[in-house]
Amino acid sequence: MPVLKNLTELKELREKARAQKADRENNKLTIILGMGTCGIAAGANEVAAAVREELDKRNIEAEIVNVGCIGMCHNEPLLDIQEPGGPRVTYTKVKPAMVGKIIEKHLVKGELSKRWIFGQLPGENGQTIEGLKTYDELPFYSKQIRIALRNCGIIDPESIEEYLASGGYGGLEKALFQMSPDEVIEEIKDSGLRGRGGAGFLTGLKWEFCRKAKDYPKYVICNADEGDPGAFMDRSVLEGDPHALLEGMIIAGYAIGAPEGYIYCRAEYPLAIVRLKKAIQQAYDLGFLGENILGSGYSFDLKIKEGAGAFVCGEETALIASIEGKRGEPRPRPPYPAASGLWGKPTNVNNVKSYAIASQIMVRGADWFSKIGTKKSPGTAVFALTGKIKNTGLVEVPMGISLREIIYDLGGGIINNKRFKAVQTGGPLGGCLPEDALDTAVDFDSLTAAGATMGSGGMIVVDQDTCMVEFARYFLTFASAESCGKCVPCRIGGQRLLEVLTRITRGEGSLEDLDEIERISKYMREGSLCALGQLTPGPVMASLRFFREEYEAHVTEKFCPAGVCAGMYAYEIDADPCTGCGLCAKACPTNAITGEKKEPHAIDQLQCIQCGACYEVCNFGAVLVKRKHELPVAEVNK
Image (cartoon, rainbow, N blue to C red; front, side):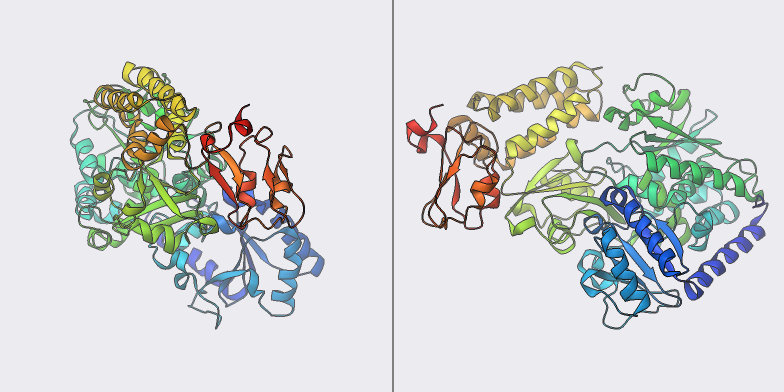
């Protein structure tokens, strides 16, 4: 395909791409497969092989399209069938053995296998199947507004034609041919877009600082170094809609006057990198990157820098050092990257979602975006829902929605209908909030005021069986291990905090340790060089603030109320509700449970390893978590 030399050729190609898309939807049978990392991990490759085999066996002609994650990770693998002129029907949790039955019933007999169907997406002209709910009518999507995720799971991420057909590069077209760089910046400023990387700084203001910087050349960097446990928002955009990122970065480059950009993506995202490289090559081939883009006179080059997985490189100055070939360590600020960044030159650093949203602001206008969400936090937030929640996956919701709506309306509530205990937002440097904070509005300022952070968008939900001391220790283990070691408060403080929490979870802590946690945390916040050290105490301090009674139980009663910290509790079977079903005995790995069928069972404390298997499988509430001192001494004297 030849390089596009002007705006007319771009418009002609876009119309051609739209016509091809409409022709496919109206005249061809299409099978769409979810091929994001989550789908592949759930078995999508095997499902794809089964689809091809079944189509060949039945001599059915169909076009197979691979797409990224549409957000329903809990329902992967996904298989969509779109018959000519019809809607796109989604089958969920598809196994290879199910493929033949689905194709026979749906395509041969013309019937729907409703027990496997999630819903439908309307066809090219709004066609739907009567009696089958559309995505918008289903709880998981009903409150979502997809901007950053607009194309994820919808288009083939490896096809620039599909991106163009969906309106792609329309924002760049408007910026280059209808607006000056200063007007682009004003549009982003007027929208109120705040950076989606965690800090929430005004994106337009950052672009303006960089444009006004006197030095040259200038650089644009995308921080795609997503390293938070339980976070996969950026990865899904990179895998499902890479051109959205490219378009946003080119617009930013034009606005600040930068001739070059870098995408810093961790090497642990191999699929994202493959699709990014393909998208960049396609953009060069068509003239969206390189010299004299679309005949506008503006030139921009883009490269990928693969990170080695250091969490600290998510901090912008450490990331810049890594691109320069140096050890990934933060440096003091100021000067900020907008004045002195990559190789000492003015540099704009934004997150994947920030760039993906920026391109849509250019297309639809600042006024459209600013009316979504709240006044101080306009637009949408993308969250990766994980933990003890029914509908794990990716959601994009308007700012201002409550935690309760996300967890219960979109997320479906807690697994096995257990009691909600806490939600961790902001990743390993964020904070947890208890049940009485569920009505907190989800925006930058409200979450901070409540004792948590927005962060880049991780949201981990935990239930009644989670020990908040161990939960905090888990995040602290991660954050302290990821310290670059450059500054003493982070390097030493993190280790000392981890030692204190480890001591408490072993039943060796004291009330003085709780004071020690607060003292170390204070010095880390005040003395650490970058956000990693400053925010490492966040999960610990939040859990201590909201769940202090659990800490006190660990240190004064030597008891873990959740039954997680081994050696601090014991399991006992209550004879009254026990029916003698035997499930607990079958689950026990050490044969510590004995009893006749239909008779109350008992646990041999000398054989019990506190694994909790009996507690998990009991359907009658007969297995109790007890303090060791409440049991006869002979039973617990190991």
